[in-house]
Length: 205
Length: 95
Image (cartoon, rainbow over all chains, first blue to last red; front, side, top):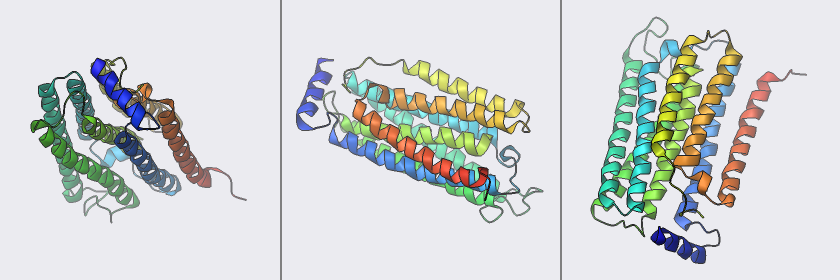
């Protein structure tokens, strides 16, 4: 506890906000990301309201599979916060374990999303004889754009997380200096938060 | 003070998030889709609670400085205005 207070006091002196610069930078970036996803979600809502025909998402999409994927992403958020808790408590082994678990869950999420896309694109249903794809309908177009951009964010998160995990195994983070873990954690939780909203709006409503 | 705060019970938050996801899926499958308003209000409410839990506890926004909260809140307000204006285009009667 004393160490964390000392670290904080150092930031108090070095920044005029009392928040480390990289953390503040990440928050500003996340605010811009909020606007980006708001644009996509807003576009989805407006198009859905305006469209005379819009299929019930549960008849096209695999809701149970995606619910499981949502659960996996929530698990990854918990492991991420446990990794940060580990290094804050001066336990690098715990941090490494939970960073690896976060990476694992992120990769599982992407794999399941890949399977979901493959099935949607290749399965021929009565409503979509050529598969559910961006050409098939307006819903398909907005669905792939929105979830695709989110998937891209998860992919970027996994890449950055791999980098941070590698540095963790090289012993670069200590109880007093682990800002990088917190910063990537913020990004990861944001990606989880966005998925929680997307899952509700695109899959359930 | 952003660093020296009481550590929240992360597992309790996790179970709340998992439980709300199950309730959300159950709610959308049980409620007839003719009750559109009830469905939307309920599901958006559940999503808002879940998103708030992640932001407040996992992203530690609850323990951060007020200035950061103001930055994030103003972004959310702008986002709501953006979606609201788009929806108003279709909901409001045309002259």
